[in-house]
Image (cartoon, rainbow, N blue to C red; front, side, top):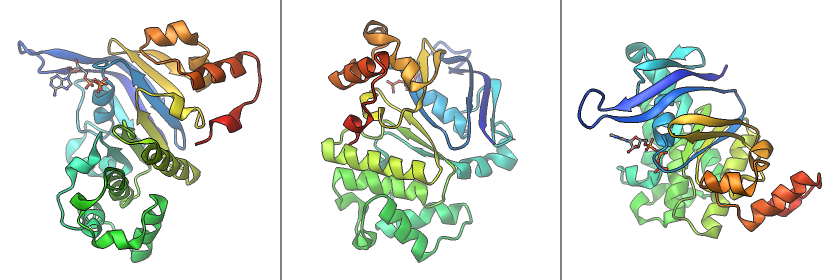
Length: 266
Ligand SMILES: Nc1ncnc2c1ncn2[C@@H]1O[C@H](COP(=O)(O)OP(=O)(O)OP(=O)(O)O)[C@@H](O)[C@H]1O
């Protein structure tokens, strides 16, 4: 079953002098086992949109169904929805609050009344490229890249079906970014539905996710990665997307029907 977003609008501080429109009439369907990138200029509404998916924000207008469950039904179903959608926020490592990595990994399953075995924990560590020795570490003593991977592991600990990454590689160097994209690659291999909010799409060529572009709080593009790139340099620059050398090359390969995929692997 999908996530269905039907005619959703969201306004902060509605009816006050601080009223700010964040989303206007968004309709979007996220199918199981798909991958999406959500793009848009700063302030266009991307973070607001992803926060509506798991009921962190409840839109007044429109509705969201996650595998058939309305996010509006807060009392009964919100936990079921939160268990299905893991959100890895920007700088997720800022949210650590327990003294060891192991406790961080155990926290969410406990909260959702889910069991997690030692083997599950080892598998998750393996998936994020960390070894067992990290379990005893204090999360605050880890490097930035390691913290990010522990934060992702803590989301994987309750096995959500949909995983949303808000700027997953922000602040990381090349090696750190490469490790995050490898994790995402592995998550796609095991059938997770992935939604990524980012400003940098040349890192995503290898994945060719579907693209949702938000402009002035509305959807202005909903389609395939290739169709988005084929909008061309001028249009993408207008959308505040940098047309890097890598994107140019990819654009040319699409235009001329040449297969270049191998060039783009991290
Ligand atoms: N808590 C809030 N209270 C009031 N207004 C908010 C709040 N959060 C966001 N906004 C406003 O809503 C609009 C959409 O913000 P949002 O953070 O969703 O955009 P974004 O596309 O994620 O931006 P960025 O790329 O900079 O992260 C902006 O005008 C923003 O100022």
